[in-house]
Image (tube, rainbow over all chains, first blue to last red; front, side):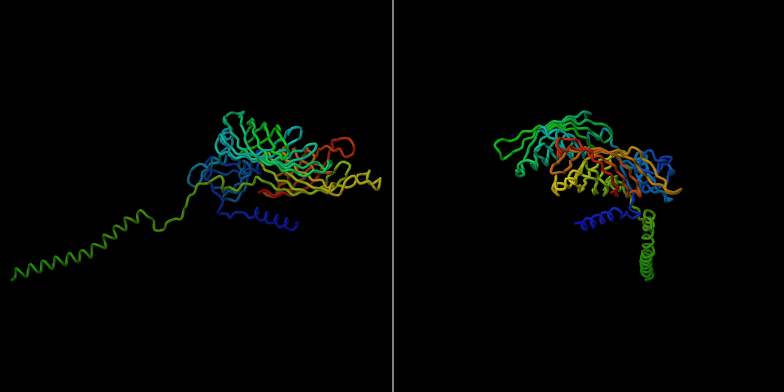
Amino acid sequence: MFYQGLVFFCSLLLLVSSAQADDDYPRVQVADPYLEMQTGAGSGYPVFYVIERGEWVQILKRKTEWFKVRSERGKEGWVRREQMEQTLTPTGSKLDLPDVAEGDFVRRRWEMGISSGDFSGATIISAWSGYGFTRNLSMELSVSNVLGSYSSSLMGNVGLLAHPFPEWRFSPYFTLGTGIIQTTPKASLVQTRDRTNNTTHVGVGLRVYLAKRFIVRFDYKSLVIFSSQDDNQEINVWQIGFAAFY
Amino acid sequence: MANWFCSVLLKSGLLLLVFVSSFALSPRGAEASEEMLSEEKPVIEPEVYRREIDASEIDTENFELTAFTGLMSVEDFGVNNIIGARLAFHITEGLFFEAGIGRTTTTKTSYERLSGSVELLTDDQRVLSYYNLSVGYNLLPGEAFLTRNLAFNTAFYLIGGIGNTTFAGDERYTINYGFGYRFLATDWLALHADVRNHVFDMELLGEKATTNNIEMSLGLSIFF
């Protein structure tokens, strides 16, 4: 087991360290009076080198909103996205690096977040990832862990979300979905077996655009657990979460 | 007779003229047309291919995978070695999401050791394992200067989140918070030093009590 892990880690290292061949890096030409190179991928790092208009640079890599470039003289440094956007590609057009702004809150494709809240008295922790097909419709996959006084559960859900007003800063949505829940009673209780049941849910929520890529989400779901016992369980799930989209 | 001879001579002369001229002129004509073509097309075609740059072609390094080891103090259950892993996703230069797991085997409480025979937990229950989902912020990005010409990028970050700790036969809702220091040896390799408090409730020793369990760790991470 340990050796498998070691082999996996080493191959991962190889994968990461195998740099691209020199010629493969995209090249762009500086069109502004100059391009500022900073020592690190952050706005506080000092500018240590300036590339003049007309020179070509290679784009080596990207970290968040920062690009590592190499000048014709071999200097390497970090350039912010706003400056990279002012460079020209070999065809003479501007390098297209879409900004993430409020407009993308409407058009966003992927969303990823974590949330926590109340699961009819128990605590729920969730992580989710969503994909938007259109501005008004998205699909979401979530994994949750419910920690109750008498049992703990693991739950997976898949759902469709309708966003009737995607352009609003406080944008409401409706959900409909299905899933599976596995419940394990606590050890201190009389031993009962694990149960696995199907679930279905409907819900409403509110997405609030914060800034840049971030949103806060308030979510309510009415969850029905189809149990083999006499009655189906109906559970109210309230959650608040933090998400990023891109 | 002379008239006939003359006309034959004239005809053959004309024929010859046409024959010769056709020989003489036709290659010239071909040459001329070739010349015209060659003006449009260079002899050696330069192999320039121009392509648009797609932002997705640029290699991104926003994910960070960390393996860490250190010490974790579990209230009443001693200070023990811990190992774990973390996966971070950097959203902006400041903010990142992190998912982490960790595992430590705790030792006997003082009470168990003094009494001699009492065993509060089974061996399985002594193993503490946790997972958490956190949000971090690079509060103080900076540079560390090792020599006159050697500088490394660093960051001091704050982090906090929620998770689940399995310990003493129970799963416990856990809040974690702490701080860390990231030292970037290269763009893709970093060293971490972290201090993290894991707060969860325990009811094992009588009444329910909130415990603070502090973890100190050193980690090695790669960006990809």
